[in-house]
Length: 417
Ligand SMILES: Cc1cc2nc3c(=O)[nH]c(=O)nc-3n(C[C@H](O)[C@H](O)[C@H](O)COP(=O)(O)OP(=O)(O)OC[C@H]3O[C@@H](n4cnc5c(N)ncnc54)[C@H](O)[C@@H]3O)c2cc1C
Image (cartoon, rainbow, N blue to C red; front, top):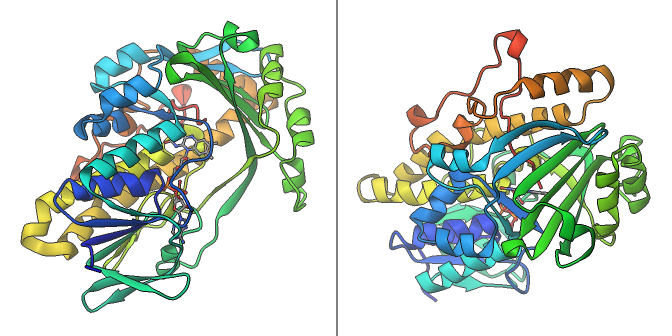
């Protein structure tokens, strides 16, 4: 078996995006996925202009549009009284950034990337559990369950929250937020779902909970996500995030939000973890990518997007540096630009979650500030939605929330579902 140029560990959205980006630069890429089949579990995902810009570069934007929904507005409401707090005009936002805000089923996004990889000639392999990664004289190797070793010039570890390769760089653990997400998709042909305006992405923010909805598959499905803090998690119990907690967490919310709870899948839920940011992602010829490097809480809806950006940046750095400086130069250029951006996203996501889930006086103060915001003020999102930087010097400054009278969070966007 000939060694590929690159082994990508993990065939999630991040791994497939990277495999495609590198293959289109002429490299031989092998993806090793531990599951028996490629696929995604979950429901919807939001793709902001910093991602649709990359899909356009890959020639995949029209396909993505045909699979998803292009909403007109993103609206934040108070979950208790249902009133509007602030909104983004997504048509104007598309004009500003040049690319649309798109919502799409995860499995449709993943399948689209898989088809692109197949067309490009990526060597896609399932039932391949990687147990270790190591640097070698000629590059890097992975060891598979069963003991087989495979080698390549470079290993890209896109193996998610519990990454095997991350242990080479840091001895850390996922950080529990004590929040849990329930998801559900409902046909829009009849019932409550038929009444919902699918031109809107809406998040209802409430005390220790929030609720998101938007349309999928050209409006055939309503995607809803209910997220709450688990009292059992806070009490240190093992069995946390269970459906009884779901109903209790939303008891004080408005009729519309409570009306969505019966649509949630109750046989599975997603406990929400992130990790503290790390600023070194490269160890010799092994590089982390996606959630393996920077798993965020989902509040600004950038986790999968960051993973896709990582892959695109790697591909661009190959084009710029592989000929002259070889892989060390490529990985150094990747390492130079991505960790700081992703650190900002991870920390902003945490802060944003705190803001969403306020109670009492702080909730009322937040609402006053959000209602004051000008719909067409993009200071909060320019650093996120603008072009993905290839050099540290191109990384836009974050919005600084000064003066205090207009203090607002770093990123006023994203509904994280
Ligand atoms: C409720 C919720 C809502 C979200 N909403 C959004 C959103 O709107 N927008 C957005 O951009 N992001 C969102 N995210 C975040 C996003 O889902 C993740 O950041 C993204 O899917 C990470 O992709 P990844 O490929 O890096 O990792 P993963 O999706 O975890 O993929 C890792 C892959 O590696 C495989 N693997 C793992 N270990 C091994 C191994 N040892 N050997 C071989 N294969 C292995 C796994 O089977 C998997 O296929 C959300 C997350 C949650 C929980």
